[in-house]
Length: 93
Image (cartoon, rainbow, N blue to C red; front, side, top):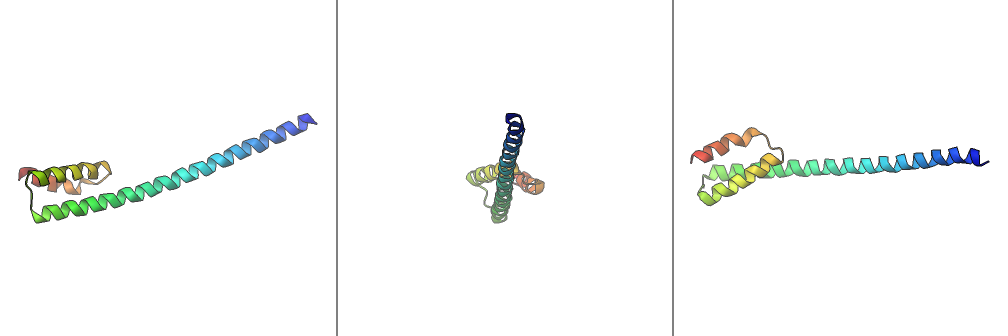
């Protein structure tokens, strides 16, 4: 009897562990996609703010430093090279 019960228990335990781990992976994937949306939103906000700063043409040393800090975060979050040309223009000011 024990010989018949043991394979059944092993199957049930294995299925349970796989089911629980699958749920965990789905939650991690959902959480990651949420972070991706937040990162994209931050990139858009940073881009908008930096464009606004550039269009106002107010670049004393303090504003340049703020712009550079924002640019570093923008690039770190995956922002594309769109603002690279603007940063280079600010470097020359």
